[in-house]
Every structure is written in structure tokens, then in C-alpha cells.
Image (cartoon, rainbow, N blue to C red):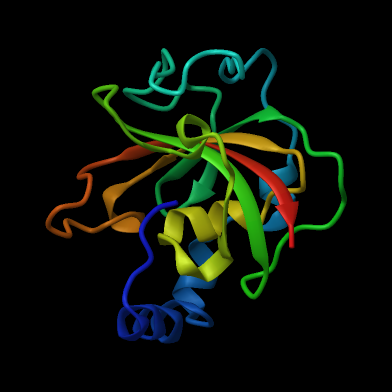
Length: 171
């Protein structure tokens, strides 16, 4: 999954973002995230395609994508089967593939053939914001701006990142 930050960095980010009123105001509510998409498909997902094959809309979110707050955009590619959503304290199991907007795949649990498990707050903020609005079985494509990803951290993918995320289970 997107690399966990050091304990000190994670604590600092939790303290900065957890209950800060401006963060809460800019993050999509559950109702916004669950709102029906505009007519027509948002994006196409083929679970049988090789993980390294970038989606056609990798360069930018399509016009019908939904606003997740703070510049995060997403499309629901497959609805989930449950009603429960993970909390920030939950552990989740996910399959995912990540690309840069030029189509270069930089990480994939699908390619490794095994889902990843982690705490919802142990990953980049764009993932945390997305996962807390998903249900088990749901697949989303998310476009995460650099400010919600690695924020220019050396050695990490830069710019907007695109992920297909399947929430396999809430553990």
C-alpha cells in the first residue's frame, strides 16, 4: 500500500487533521460520497486486465467523477455489498494498483497476487479519506492530488496519483 509514514509523522498528521474544523469542512460527507453519480459511466474497470495496464482516464479524472474533498476525485467502479464503512481506527484488507498520471504503474497488490492489510490511518491521507467512505466489495478509482499523497517526499511518486482500490474486507 502507499508507504506508511514514520510514527512521529503519523502522530503529527493525526493531531493536525483529525478534528481540525477546516479539514472536516473540506472532506466529503458520507452523503456526498454515496450520492448517485451523474448519468452515464464514470470510468471503466476490467478486473481481468493486467495490473500494469493503465486505465484510459489515468491522466485526469473524467468529468463525471465525484468530488471527495480537497481535490480528491473518484469513480465507483463496482458497488460494495455491505453497509458498514471502516473507521479511522479500522484495519482493512485491500487490493490496489497505483499509477502516475503518465500511466506508469508504481505499486500493485494485484501484481503480487495478495491483498495488503493495514490500519486506515497508516497510509497517505487520500487513501484514508477514500477508505472511510467505502464498503466491503467496493472498487473505486481515485485521483489523489500530491497534497493528499506524498507531498513531494524524496523517492516517492510525485504529482497526482491514480489508484484502483478494492476494499476486500474490514478486519
